[in-house]
Length: 413
Image 1 (tube, rainbow, N blue to C red):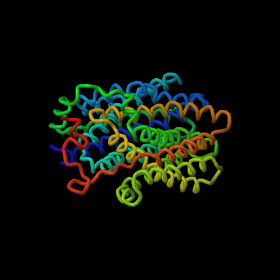
Image 2 (cartoon, rainbow, N blue to C red; image 1 turned 30 degrees about the horizontal axis):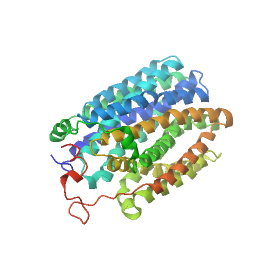
Image 3 (cartoon, rainbow, N blue to C red; image 1 turned 60 degrees about the vertical axis):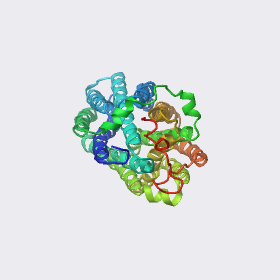
Image 4 (cartoon, one colour; image 1 turned 135 degrees about the vertical axis):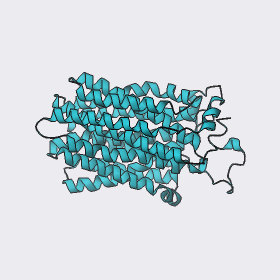
């Protein structure tokens, strides 16, 4: 089936991603609360959050290479198993170093799932459908980010913080395993077959990184994901210092995710109105101001408004950075380019929480949000300079005439 055909596979992928991301989004704040109950300080929280991204930092490019010249779908169940196992084993870990190890396993599982899933979307979508399909795909992540923190907040609390956070992690592991039920027939047969007959020569990483648009997409994605990640890991710490209950923190994180879903539902009209580069620039700039605002000692209702606006702005960066990287990458290296984007994400997830931990230890728990504001401000400047490269509809003036000019076809021949 040609790219752009039946999209039942995309719906199944979104459902699976919802459960997998829900498990991770439930586990991340639960890990922070459990670590606090085991005696961790702000620096230790930063280290544990950073280890989540450490294994993926080294595994992303090899997995992307494999996916460029093979099938995508096998990575999905492997990722789900690692996510579920990492969540559950974090719940029974009784030391900070063990929690860090299982957090790393969870991160590796998330990487496997995301590389396989993003490569499927890139490979099985017609060029003019990529912004839309990546936007729909990331709705799965947002649904998981909506439900996960609320579930964690509902379970965590009371005098036995260690016990309730352990229960939340075990429940997260069980919920993540449900994703396995939606992974059937996600990869179209002819697309999987063509992937084996693709280019045998590997495109050098340096050539991919020199392609105009790839570095910009990687940096924007790094900044946006770092903001989401530190928000998830450090808002519980801010809540502890300001006397905000875990259940309220869970609701605030879910409000942010709901706003992200709303953003992705209206992504197509926003793109028609502003274009990709300007939309990325404006939303990153607004997100920078809102992140810095979280550092202020505002009441809960004001914090909720800021998080809702921040969630809407952050919802733009991930799907559009995927399309930017995919369309800028050389033929035969698009999965590797997506993997490099994920490597940048994981580099940010290693460095940003560790830096945030140091900043929090020196300047207070709200200071990391000022740091995020600076990072997002830089990303807005990068987005402004990135190429838009709009893709025309088939048959429209300027649309590619040769099948080799469309994404997912020349690289699969």
